[in-house]
Image (cartoon, rainbow, N blue to C red; front, side, top):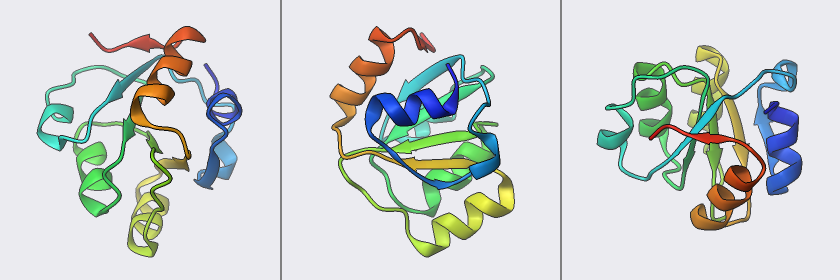
Length: 114
């Protein structure tokens, strides 16, 4: 699934990563626990989370995750945006809940990590 499709399906706003709208995302993982995120060993993953701080960006960097979708109308802080730009992470925001977002993307063909 392309990043632009994720944005459309979840009514998300692209915060950073404008040049990567056609990048492919194979799988998604939903979690607010960054310790769980660190257990993932897969590529082309979208992290769906409500954790809106730099810890989510740093965790994604460590787990080699390049796409983050913030849920529950959480807004990225200026520090998050700067760090995401620096690292090359696509950062998006949706008003939907974690459950609804995950369901929409799963139903549309995005595969789960497990």
